[in-house]
Image 1 (cartoon, rainbow, N blue to C red):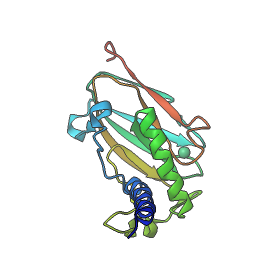
Image 2 (cartoon, rainbow, N blue to C red; image 1 turned 30 degrees about the vertical axis):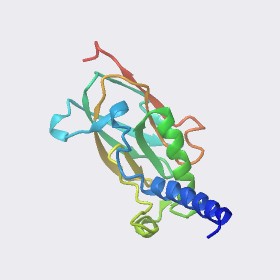
Image 3 (cartoon, protein in one colour; image 1 turned 60 degrees about the vertical axis):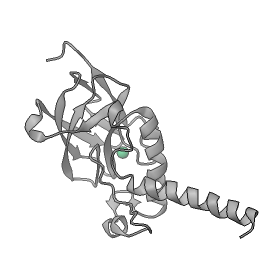
Image 4 (cartoon, helix red, strand yellow; image 1 turned 180 degrees about the vertical axis):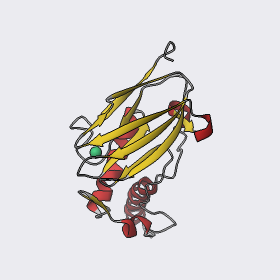
Length: 181
Ligand SMILES: [Cu+2]
């Protein structure tokens, strides 16, 4: 293989690895230090119901004590597929590109998820499964739980990264509040 072919192949490969890795975005990525880590329901100090609509959350913000474990009961009350994802703004931005790919591949179709497509092997064991512990992706009417142990501080938002939703305001602030009980 001559050099220019190699460069093209390498470039193509790095794009697909990024994109597919994104689709599977197998948990962690070492982001956990910034936002926290998956928690155990038995450690949760509170349970918070988060309702998702088109395109906003109720409540619009959450107060947490530094290091607190919360159990979120996430309900999609909208007519579109929505996500509840705990992360930094930069993580959400990166995840929006992955979700765009899920739309382009027909994994997310407005108010429906193509579960067969999500399971499909995209090569090298990668799939478009959406199974990170810091997020749930729900069809209208679905409800799922997320248990998360928050870090001590940080710039953290819960957000929906379905294309266009974050931009139309579907995110909320996690406020670290020492005095919060
Ligand atoms: Cu949404």
